[in-house]
Image 1 (cartoon, one colour):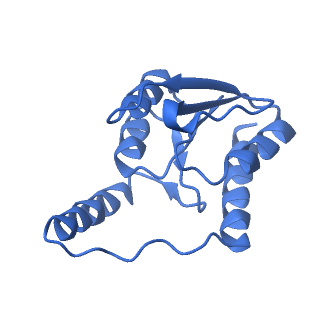
Image 2: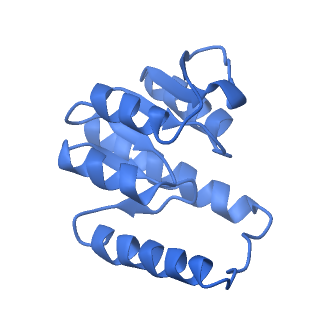
Length: 145
């Protein structure tokens, strides 16, 4: 098992590394040239800036049983198809049961943006979000260890 992090704009890289170290699980950080993230205890792979280059690189590397951290619903859907466990930065695990509704919400939000309506931006990250993420990741790693 490997943890793959879609690191562009990911607020839980450090937290993921701390937890992965406790379970001796290798971590691969994938990012583009605008977000080069080097961390001790992880392998970093850097890809050209461009639409979805990191996403496609991650999908090509993910294997059944791996854990993926991403906030991208489209990427989550592709990783689920490859039998990976996928969670977002707030500890929500993407599943076959919830991914369709999330994809629909993304589509509706994009329609609103095209119509000139801007949804509210995300609020400042909370300790509760970090705790929920850590709890979900630890449960997944405990289950697979």
